[in-house]
Image (cartoon, rainbow, N blue to C red; front, side):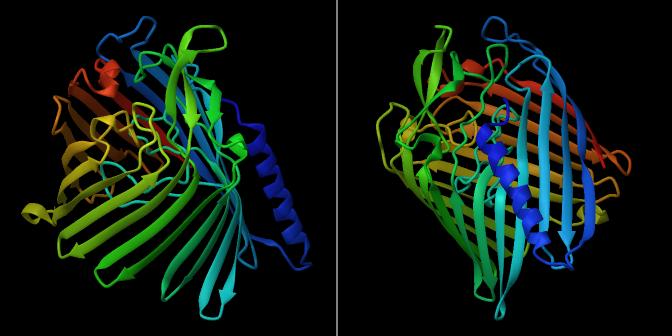
Length: 421
């Protein structure tokens, strides 16, 4: 997926702003330079034959994500993080993006501090494990991983004001980015390919509708609390059946105007962490294409056994319940699963060794349908700069009524070797 003209223009503007800010002071100089990043060789294998003709069983390629950081004597900085993936099996997975390209200005207001980011950035909200309901600023880079944790860079103006009273953030989002999806030869897709070129919007301004978001967060003793508001173009598309430019059957993307109120909270009580995310959203379309206001929540927690059997290792037990008020008319939020009435459980073993070895096993079950999924993740640093990530996802059963029934044969095993520099 090529980088859009709009993003190129935003990045070019950010670089010119940086030069102008530094040039405004004769004594301005770069005092901190850092060039880092990662290069990853990745392979994902699907043991079962795909449900549709042409789907491949092996997806191999590489990822390059360098990062440039510049800071002047006044603390102002510029961050540039391009991203490139090559995939030999699915042309849709081969894409370039700017994850970050922003100028950071900062200063004091009395005893408080302010920060202003201009350009392209990534923002993460939420506290739960199974999904992040409140997280809405950035679009998901869905071809990266079905879990929905990877994000496309978002053009924004991001103002932060913080003090003893908490942290207030305001976002101006001038451009919308459509979600990425697998192509005809890719796995983890619906029966019809989703056309990335045919994207329509409820707003007459299209992708140029100016979206607004804000968040307030603060710690009240044992409780960390965040409340948020988003008003603008939804990050979740409604999929219309139609045809692509070549006349082949395909889904087209439609993005509605929505308003979302969000709440995220985390309370620490000894070895317990209690977590909650909740949203109320209006203007969105449900699975039937009808506009429906709804509420959704994720509630749960984790308990950690520290230094088990006298070792340095910690064992954490995880448990969460996902609920969506639309029931079976719910649409996917952060993954192929609709998570309208699902129970998530898991165990994380952190060895706390020099290699940062960590193993996580999780199980997701739909309480109203016969859908079950099991996942295993293993992370370990091999040397000072080399690390590995192993992941296995097994779709034990998929209910025929589930939206992602077409992915029933897409259990996979993935191995990534990462060089950090």
